[in-house]
Length: 321
Image 1 (cartoon, rainbow, N blue to C red):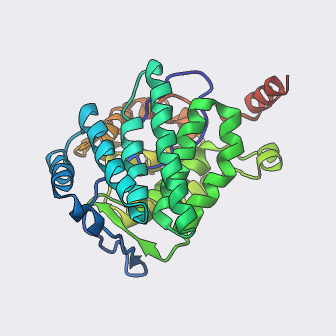
Image 2: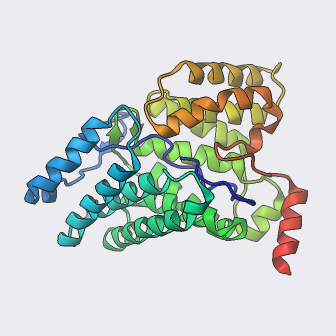
């Protein structure tokens, strides 16, 4: 999912959906949740498009979907959604496809196009929320779209959106619903994964809370990542992000209990099968994090993030001028 290569990458924008999402029958991840009743019936009205869409999902279930296919998937679901304006679930499916396509771009020159794709996803997720304010899947994807757009626009913009994103993802965690997108990713698991990254990458000093009403919390980060793995099966991305939070909590001390646990998760991640482009990127980063555990607090697959209070104050002074 990491496709940003420009200065001042926002702290929290890569937080969500590092698992390659694909649609499958809803199942319960935990008994305490109800399966969200996703309505797929409108797709049956368009058998040729539906068959093509499903065939692409099946063909690339265990490997990265190429860019032309990602574009086609977005075209298909946007086309059906436009013809079915009352179909609420089609709106988050558009956002899902937009996220997957936009996140596939790795070059800075492609960022303007990537942003336009994320805006398409944002508008779709917002329409979904307008139709059904408590739709948990749309809340998940709206947070993801806002994060991605903010990450392109710059750090100050991202911090202004951070509280809204936090609220969206917390609303998912507090929902009574779950929905399994694929064998290795679910609504509840994805929201916890996202919040785990959010609370690690957002700085935890007072000025952050005072200015933006958000604050990092490494203990929350560790717990959310552990909860994510309890909901969804382990994979390279949720393993490496848990490792990063543990190493961050240990301040990079690999001889401590948390540090040793973090290293174990890195080794586990390295040995797992990487079934998507995003998982592969996570897996490739295990050596980088193992080599420099002291940088775990600002670790992200795209690039190292600055989380110090001094740097934050410098950036705020620069923005004031």
